[in-house]
Image (cartoon, rainbow over all chains, first blue to last red; front, side):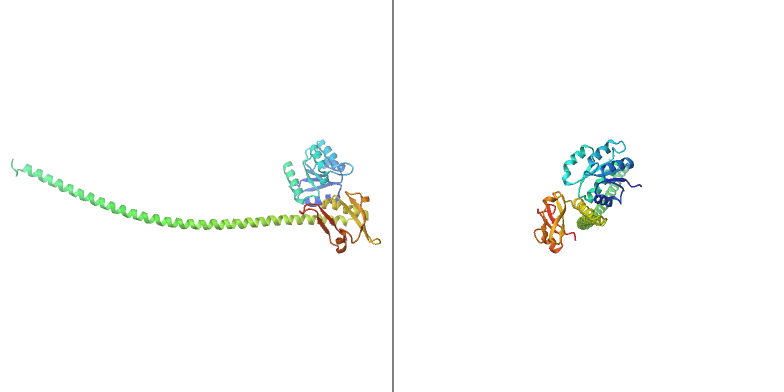
Length: 124
Length: 200
């Protein structure tokens, strides 16, 4: 069976590397370093799930989330936002614009795998 | 009427024969009933003995099953304990696994460049993303002034961070021993902590 495709969007290479390490055994991973590249990659690749940071250069996570929800190819893809404790207030806005869930940095491996697994199962 | 008349003697004979037959039948019936009674008595005694044996057997089986049940309960308790231990170990292994992954990522990133500025940026990224610290400063040891000078910060403007004389304050233990120094502000481990981590 083909592995499900997950798009990781974060300007931090450390986070991209960590998330890739946590998920690569079970999923096909593609990465993007900011919201704009994330949006383009999402439309081109149509992944099964997106894990996206909020604070990013060029286009932040919230703008990218809005754009992904507007595009017909990507409007139904589950999106998990990655936030820091300081960004909790932005989480409400993320939910307003249609994010599926969120995880807090530093990322907990079990939380990440559980939430990704849940949405992949529902989306399938 | 003549008593010896043939008609009368026939009647009498017939009467006695019927009486004899009746007595024979009574004796037969008596014998049959006696045998039947004896048979029922014997059957009843046998039943009494049989039921007693069965009760004893059932009691034995009951005791046996009680013992079995007790053994199963003990085994179940042992299995539950073992299960809890395995679950606790699983959590510990997962924690260690996560720590190892973080260590691998940090090490990989730190070794990805020799450029000093990039190394400092990577250290900031690691502290923010893998440790989760929102307020920190990075200091460089200045041999001439024997002080730790701030070179980068997060959550605090760098202008507000002063140099620290080596051997003074919270950094003393870390600089003297080279070991990380962590001070938990609250009682719980999850509460805020103050840390001083030597990077060499």
